[in-house]
Length: 486
Image (cartoon, rainbow, N blue to C red; front, side):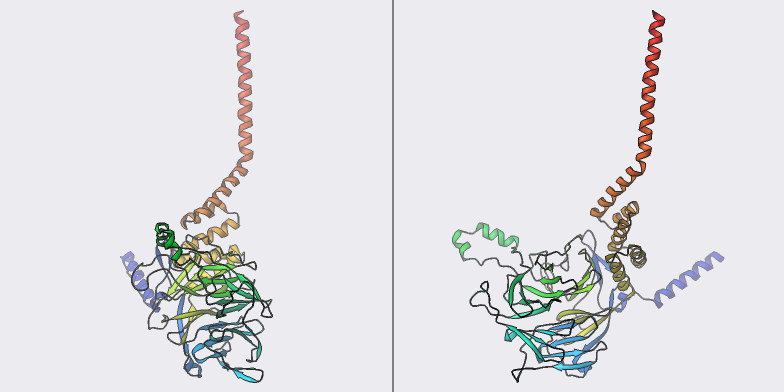
């Protein structure tokens, strides 16, 4: 009887707990997920939940008009590029308006922006604006005063009829400027601190889909001559980390390298060690609305070995670790808070994510959940070499979601760094990580051989001694037998 009462009480408490503590995803208008080894979508607790939407009206400056970009400095100051209104709105880290910059002076005369598309702010608060329709990069100080203008680049490698149409801009600590420009298939344009054109970085490989290749193979020489040449795809967005590596995205339906990490020499050094390359959705419809691969229009380096890419096609965010593994994806299209119409830019404010939605003329602020915080902390601790701490956090993640393969792989890699090879093998098997499992197995086999080497050699010496003794004893017996017969 007591046992039955205990079971009933436990059931009631479980039901109450479920009602009192709903899953984070229940409060969101989207499903969070990742992909497993078999490229199957696996649901996850929501890593972020929408907190609020910020509009021009809520800031007291009038409605936004098709804003195109947003940038947040390390100390949390926010700069919104309100393109349709041709202005920059500067906010402090409490979302209070500091100033609005809608013009600047050139030789004493007022000058305005024309459909600006990209903005970047340096550590010393120099504001770089890709002033698209006027074909220039405008560099201002934090008060909106002109420092210099970069326009009309000159070089022998540029075509005679070249027209400079900048779309996105970033700069490194040395003052070098990186510009994504319309029609620039050769790569990202690079300028020195004085605005002199240096050349291109990150040239995109030419790719063609199977249908194009088949058609060209079957076409006659005359038909091939009339075909449009396969040219590389343009870059779509650009960001830079504290080490000076440039992160960029391209929109190329035929490529698996739509995210790049360019070193100072312009070589792509992005790690792609996951089950699939970092390119947004892996499985998708081929026909109908929202069909085809993801179109990654923006990227933001989060730090701690993580970066997030924004997909404009299905309005989703994809966060990866430094190994190129998808940690989680979330988002969608709709009218509710937390889903988008036309997302164009993603940024980070402290531990929060903000997404600029040009279609809704607002900024959506997302707060991390406990699950999101734990995944971010574990990834960062592992990236910084704090393996013991990362293992503890990954174990906590698995208590929240036991189907999270990356947690198993994260524990396995941390144990591998601690030379706990046998235990690491178990977690790599659970995480379906064949590559690291093989590494752990080889190390464990070597470890066992080293540990057992003395015992093996002793056993071999004993066997050898016994064999020699046996041979000697046999010879002695044979000799005695022969002498006896004689």
